[in-house]
Image (spheres, helix red, strand yellow):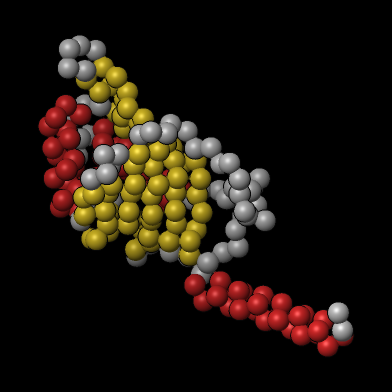
Amino acid sequence: MSNRSRSSTTRFANSARLIAATFLLMTGAQWPAQADEPPQVPAAIRNVIATYEAAWDRSDSSALAAQYVPDGDLMIPTGEVFSGPQTIAAFYTSVFKRGYSGTHGVGSIDRFRYLSSNMAVVDGTWGILGVPNVDKGSHDERGLFTAFLVNVDGNWRIAGLREQSSGKKINVVASSRP
């Protein structure tokens, strides 16, 4: 490679780095964390899960729905999507009337990362413990979730929650993070 070609390649690489750094600064994005050093989940993010669990345990549909932004949505394992806090509250009211009142909700965060300074994605596991059986006894339901959170006036709220029940544990196969 000639000196002229090397110089051109170096200028291009430096320009690409500058563009990437400018984009990250403008959007508030952060460099990805190392795969072996997951970022510590801030208390405010953990509080979203704790508030959700507490509202579930009280069978409080309104408190569950209040965790969502006005155009937030919930997709349950059947693929049904409920949009907006009123629709989400009505869904949870029907769930509790169908026998889930008195059950215990649990959730844990397994993966977390900021998408920008006011947006985050959370992957974790959920469970509903003590679901009454039709005949007698009870069973537990478990699955995975992905939550897209936004910071609104200093409070983290749910923009989108996706639940599924086919998987029970998050298993990171590979990471492209440096």
